[in-house]
Amino acid sequence: MSNNIPVRSIIEDLLPLYNEDLLSEETKEWMDEEIHNNKEYEELVEYSKVPIEIEEVVSDVDEEKLFQKINRKLAYFQIIFVGLSFLLALGTSILNESFGFILSYTVLGVVTFLFYRDLKIAFIISFFPIFLWSLGENLFDYMKGNLGDDVKFLSHFFLSLVGSAFLSIIHYVFALVGNIIGWLILKVKE
Image (tube, rainbow, N blue to C red; front, top):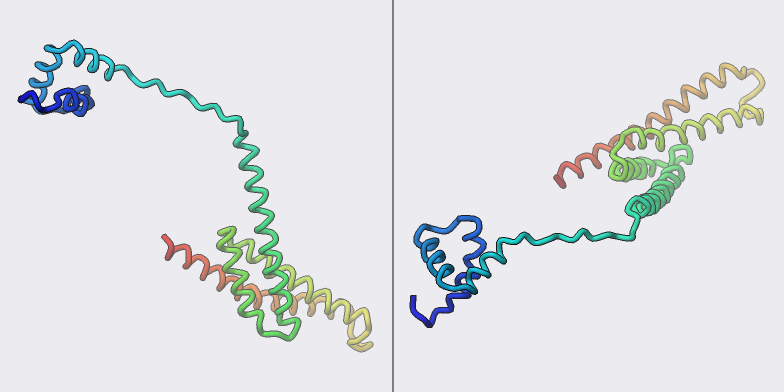
């Protein structure tokens, strides 16, 4: 090699490959020759073989508490969001003589599935409140005496159970459609 080529820079660039024994034979022979003829290069090779000590970084942050705090805050926002969706859905329920429940319960199903990825949550949020609300209204009508004197409590209670369950199932079907839409959204994202 001519003297105008910076040999040290070339050796420094080739050292990782030299140490890993990944050089071609000609390049390795040239490196060996240059290294053995120069004390500085020999020290450089020895220095490059010393493993770098990795210092462990000690953090004063308690990760478990940090994640608990983050999860608590996320759960708080999820509860608020699902609660607002639930109130919107109840406000547009068929019990209020509104067919807006079709859209609101579908949106409720999408939101709950995207948050929790669990069909049971949508069932709990869409079925039970409507069931209890409907049953409560029917029983309240009976107690006020709005149904007449010939209606017996047990027959009215049984019919109220069946009617409330049917009404709740109608609402749940639209929440289930929302769950399916949420599932499809997740599949499209994958």
